[in-house]
Length: 118
Image (cartoon, rainbow, N blue to C red; front, side, top):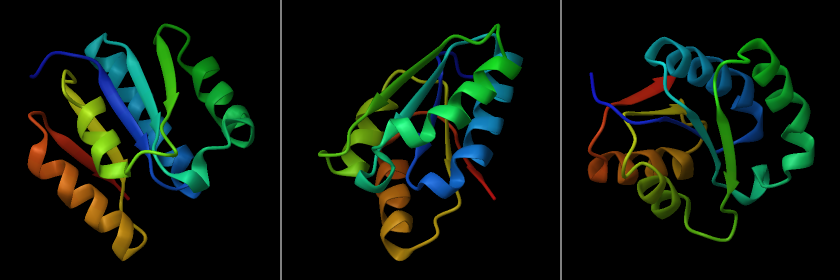
């Protein structure tokens, strides 16, 4: 198993529950922190995601969470940079050609496993 924090990346607000559920579960199982990256302008409003993030944080109180938003940076670049020292990256199944391209581009450059949740 690769060491390092778990990175959960949101490319669409509609996938926050699935990505956070898997991210917190994997971070707890691995006894490592969870990083949440909000990588798209459409999901950059953390206020609207705040309730979902808070809900999952309360369910996993032993998992340290850090949240960062990179709405003005290309999502593939932001995801690749955020994954550089991670042990695992989690994203939702792409819902569009654009998000599929982001995931493919970042996956080619990552040095850790990638889980795509459905």
